[in-house]
Length: 195
Ligand code: SF4
Ligand code: SF4
Image: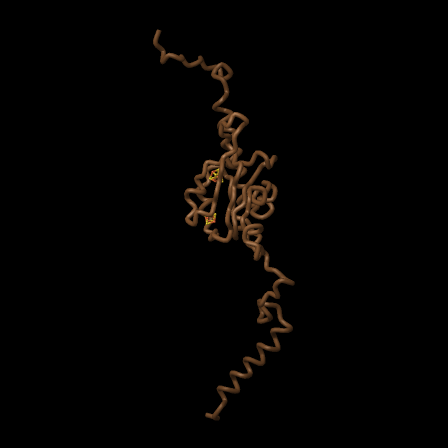
């Protein structure tokens, strides 16, 4: 065998790949390196970066009821919540403070998994680097609150499934709340039927 033929063959493969990379699409051997940041690959729906809070219509009344389940379950303890109160200092079912230290968050999505109120989901933006840790990387409630329309925009399948489930629960509640007289049934005795 001619000495060095293998080397020549290898060089031919390199040459072929070098030339085709400039003229062929990525799926046929062309350049597959995305020239970021000029170009970006679309982010898949289930991509998760940092969490955000969902509100339906009014950001002053988010879905979050400040139950703190997410904060307790967060493995890095990077969520800090304080309940809002009324003028008489009675606690309200909404957060006054909801902070997430995204320098500590490890993008695990556990907060999303455990939230019983469909309030917290993982967001898509990933270009959040900053040297100003306290001003830019500690997300406050107003940074975290995003509309349900936004949720639909980034995760249409997931958001639609959540909406459908929430609607079904509302319908169930409404039908359970229909008075017995409206259903034609006799009202239940309040004292267990005793005289
Ligand atoms: S985001 Fe969900 S789990 Fe966390 S405090 Fe709000 S309602 Fe509770
Ligand atoms: S994604 Fe994980 S680490 Fe980040 S806030 Fe949620 S539970 Fe905590």
